[in-house]
Length: 572
Image (cartoon, rainbow, N blue to C red; front, side, top):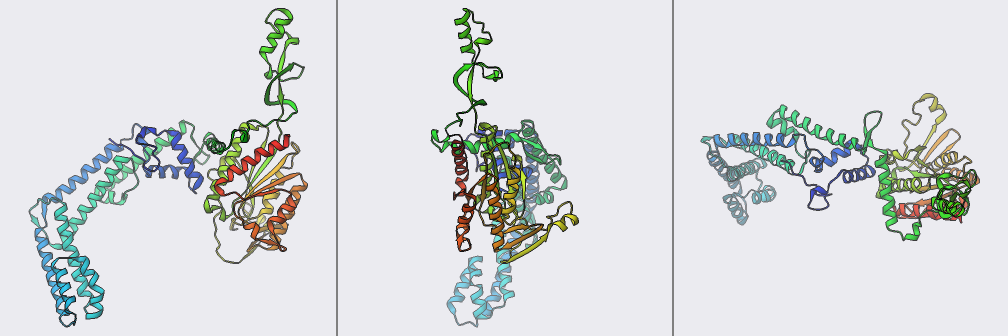
């Protein structure tokens, strides 16, 4: 029977503490931190000893592994019942004496008698390690031939292996073998024993990946190999099917596994709960409302008389019945008796998170923490500020919009050029005609085009549904790319034009009534100068926004607290 332990993640001695919620929590963390597909992440958990049989009551893998172990033990028993190694040990001892004598004859011409005595003692003790340690001094000083010394070392190694195998394995056979055949028998026994232990480990903790499948095929035959792969895939498929039925994962149009919307929302809620656990009660403060009365979802305990057009869902039943009893003596309210709870409108706003996806964001878990922040903010807005709008824009060399469902598997663009000085120019108009499907194909995407990111946010926030618009910029580096009309410029180190065009777009956002709050994950902006002034000063001057320098692990705390405080300022 397979029993399972999953050391790194097990909360206590009781494996029943495992459940699908715990599994999805660990699975989500793998996806958020690493560039890995969901199917690969699930395989990785199984490879680490995921207790799959806590979720699956079938599969037959324990019977299969037990059968493999019996086959291995049978092969080992056949070798041990047939052969004996006593003759091989005697032959190899004589080989050691012969090779040692040849080395000693070469040592006779040496001047260091103590070294010869030390060698003789090591040879008598059959100490491979001591003779190996003496090799280079003897070869260098005594002119002993490498070939002769290596032959002695090989004979000693074989002799000690045969002697060790006779102590380790209970040979009971009668057929003597020579030295070469003895080593082959020992190799076979050791390989079988290693595979047997790995299979036993798999039975104990459910680890179905951490052993040599090629050795399985070699020792037990291709049929056993194929059957094992089939059973293992069946376990994986059953586990994936279970998670799909529970709505934890879904398949996309291409049939690939991915987190379900509910699982993604759960990541955001967990991040949100983690943030607010560290805040005082009045920091989060519950719902934020304005003094303006409206049909919003924030309902006060104060009621008033119903007026035509009021939202009937806000009806105060108790007050309406009391009015009817006072007026008629009967608990049957009429139109004139109805009262509704007063509602207070929320300060509606539109927010764009502008997320740096340049290659450097992979360092120090910056991007992982930024993704946690995005999902936590999305959860906060969805649950508490339903009339608000949240947009997610990722930018590197260019910029594009992402959905919340894209965030868990999103990763920064990989660095592909390692030259210390880079100056690249691309005519995007011409490329759009030549490569209509993907004009950015072949262009390194890991640079920082702040101009394009801000421009896309400004375009998305250009509607008139609210005057309260903001960009939350998450970045760790200064601009290193920009567009001049249809020409894309990529520069490292950055050029003055990268700064000029970024600042120009920042001013355009400000003129459009969009505030920009910047969260810098490194102090690089403060050390990069623009006309003898730090770039950060110029950016703040042009945006009239604020700049924060949070540690990456505290990013979600900074952003959400600032978002809530901003909501308070809007309605005060």
